[in-house]
Image (tube, rainbow, N blue to C red; front, side, top):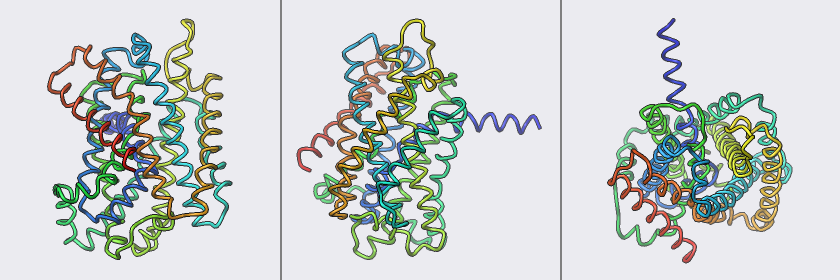
Length: 406
């Protein structure tokens, strides 16, 4: 019995905040972009999915070091201008991400059920708001996030089952992970940029700055590493499923129906598992964003007499007001976006790609703050710092180019 309890404790630390925050970045923008990448290029751009996930996980590790050494988000106030720029970029990216996720789930469910997407959008917003505001405590929200995260394994299950039945395809997947075609790179630049944009999850970085019970560096890094492995596997699985069903039939994903057709030939459980995965990933992202919104605005307005931490932030009137405003703003964004998409469904995936680039450009401001404060920590390492600069420059260049040439 003691051994069983010890294993549960180790598992709870491994599937902790690092794991959840890494996996929360796998949401509807990823699903749309990864489906498109698989349908347009087969297995040839799988390396971009792995690289973008690695960059996010790398900065999450830096964020955790900053959290421990500098004191998390409150410590960022030492440079007020940088702090304000980060919060503005973060909030804009969060609203855009919530909008994209509500749009994606609403349109997909509308295609399945034949119900007007506006009703589904409102329902998704109400459910997410009720979970955050109605939760008894932070531990309950974390359990919900863990369940939603593990539901993403449905993509992995479908891909693994296909590989077991068709083992020859494994070599093609491995080639796609480690191949680098310069000619393909020049002709698919915008699509590669969209992959990096889809991987941008600034709220996932901020979750690492929340002052929860501190784990050791080894425990948190192991949790983030597990999240990297899990999300990379899920992302590659999404693109893989698209490659074997759409790319093989010369169909490029452009509409919400294409995301459903991807699973048409994979058995009776395929569509239900896809719906579970899409719903879980979108709710996971929306709830994570709402938690981050509550915390950063609470910390921004916090007076010296107010208690610190995520728990009081979530249960404060500020949280209810801020997240209600965010839901309303996102639903208005849904209305505007779907007004154009509704008359031209071929723009569904294209709009997801564009949103992912905008989200990345607006939301990578936390990277700059994390690099800046990492230099002040006792853990500072020159090589790690140089890698951070390279990754930051890479992300900013590809996204600026995406907006210029889109």
